[in-house]
Amino acid sequence: MDRALRLTAGIAMLILFIFGIWGSNVHWFWKAFLLFMSLNHIQSAFTNWCPVMSLYRKLGIKDCCKEDEIKS
Image: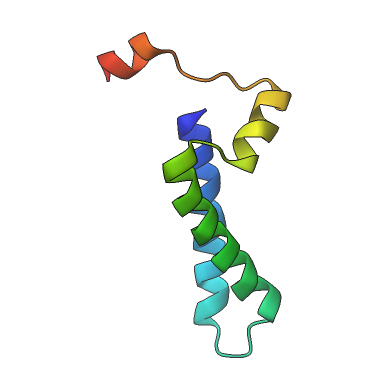
């Protein structure tokens, strides 16, 4: 789950960054979405909850167990 979540966030932020490079005429939605993602990352650091994690659990992606975290 952790790797899938990081991959999703990384790809989304990269896409938003590329849109931002194209100039100042970027639609406000993309700027608002980037702001939402940033604020969501911050709250996730404190609460350990993210909307995407809930979606991934419904899709069947499993959380890593504590033993896997210790090995890596």
